[in-house]
Image (tube, rainbow, N blue to C red; front, top):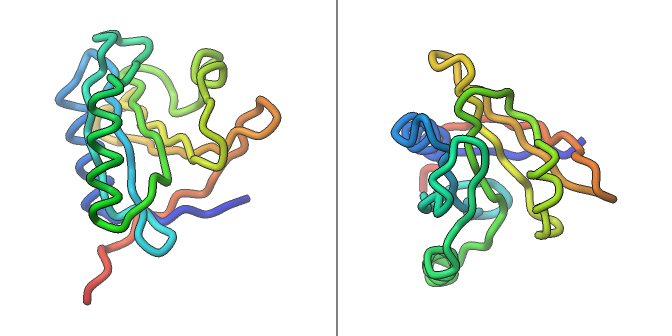
Length: 139
């Protein structure tokens, strides 16, 4: 099982985005620096739905452009589940087109205890990724 490090500030930003979007799903992209997530790019859920999301191409391209300008690469695609567990739904799996990218899901089923889970999709099936929240690196 793969392990992914997520800076605490990124985790906190994801939780804020998910709570702010309620009752809708929130979404975004995550950039990495030396193998762990250090940057979060919140995007608009163009579907404005509590059961699924889609990102606008314009926002996706802008986020990727910012990542490149910061010498980062796309490491994860993130979205929230407002009322269901942090597991990949059938729709999530059907729309998981980006290979070698971790799919992060934050569940707010227990609003006081958000649950962040990660998955790689291999041969159409979700494979769990261990998520470890870490304090940001200091120079």
